[in-house]
Length: 326
Image 1 (cartoon, rainbow, N blue to C red):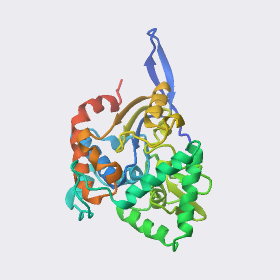
Image 2: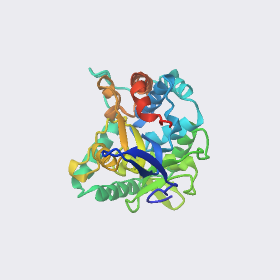
Image 3: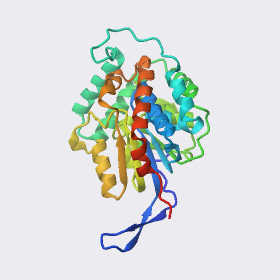
């Protein structure tokens, strides 16, 4: 694992300056795909968007770099092991039994207690923190406290859950970064195929947002969404085209002054020369996320909403994504 991802070989892209002269620009790669976190429904929405784009002839799995955070890390590995239509069919095939609770007027279920409690806990820790580094340390400490009060069985149980969602323990044959946070130090961690851990452990660490940390050897890790935001698009710096699929719509509980919001990261990528497109859920499907993100009964509608959006955006995104040939 590494605190910063290793740099691949650069290539040179040609462009025309304002003065009409041809200039060469070094890039780390042509296309980066950023898959953000957003719980169970966020994962289904990501699969749906990718499937909708695929249906319309645009295969974003061809990215030179894929960055996965939390639920996005699961999707990043899933799309490497199965076709988007197959994954979409699995997401909508069977709706799990709905959780108990009154149906809300916005078509979502009443938020489950554990998710609401988790969000409130996060808000309290954010309010007590003096910046994102302090926030990460506090979240790590809270997770370690939760582990100390438990029977210690969560890591193997969570690994089994994650393994059942993935095509295997081997890393995909592509450049993939999976985010997490060191629970002991609060330092960001980026797992990649050279990290010395299998991809199941990497995804399990990136999705460890519910309480206890995930253990890999002596290391303890918490959800990659605590690194900066649910998307971590800043890791795509140096790529010519960056496509961000954000189930949470770029929203963050962090104060704007922390500089961790997705909008800030997109602005910084563009300042560095990257062409960036971000895709957010349509307004009529926002009730499927946030406090309802861990309701598995909402996965099918989230996947369908994502596919419809992907189909609608395919023509515009194809012009952005596809590499022009000389």
